[in-house]
Length: 407
Ligand SMILES: *Cc1c(COP(=O)(O)O)cnc(C)c1O
Image (cartoon, rainbow, N blue to C red):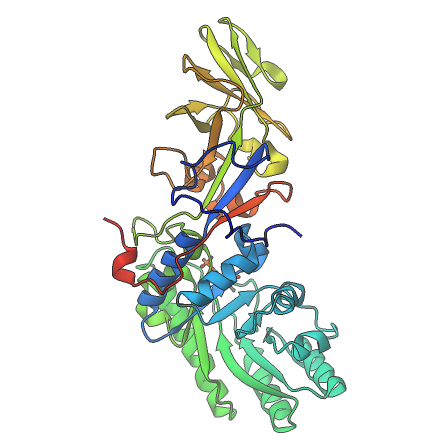
């Protein structure tokens, strides 16, 4: 299994890209700075105020490795974990993580026994899911802890306001029968990246109406939750009891036009496996969409779209080579791409940074997202399974938010 070995034996410098590019034997690697995850967690926890913080580690921790991210976040201010499936939840439990955990995507007819045994809370978005879960709980003889989800406008998951009264009544009935306990009520926001968007107020009103109905049905949930990273940082009224933070943990600023001092945790880097000089007028890569304008250097970089370097970014993308942002020359292929290194003195083995925190001027995942017309989430989760992850350890103690905000 990839992405789980935290390399703590070998001391590593704080700047992942500053160490020896020859440190690993891999052509390419994703270096995950757990210190950044720790600081980002502290920032998010501080802004969550009295609400608890859930570290969302779905999709293998947004590509960073669910287990090391979970351990780091739990040590630095998160108290819950969020995943999308029972399979993701069980992998964390098997690795010894016993923190409260919510999993939110299921088929109604699943056998929930493994999740119930592992004490994983389950999201319930419909009557069918509720009935399936109650049946599993009865068979297993284990009561389920559920978080009923109401759709307040995203129209992606959750019970519609029309179905909600029936869902809460049925949940209360199952609760009385001892088959489950409703621990949470929750929903998900549409415009969390725009704190002044009026849609959020509408969703808050819809959510609170749903909560009132649940109370009238006799439910007494401990946890109301609505906010993701962006809302947790910028929309205090959405925080309630728990903030579900994903992208912010990984260091991508989630609120349009605002900086909270979050630091990108992942650096994707490779080593050039060829370096050559070519004359002016040479076409490069499939279809010759790039032509050298003058005599220049070309570096062959052993990462391509199978590694998460988006093909759609070809023509705009840049990589960091010898202290400069250099253009990716022509189409990005499955396993490789070419960088025009200009007149820089570079050789085989030269470090090429695809993206990183941006400190030195290297592109960030957000830059790649712009070039590929997508979001940073897709860039981070797209880093392929054959790219080994290497971990820079987080500091042992708790980080105060004041220390974490760099100026
Ligand atoms: C992914 C996800 C989150 C985390 O959102 P971010 O914007 O990444 O912080 C929270 N809640 C749900 C339901 C999600 O699917």
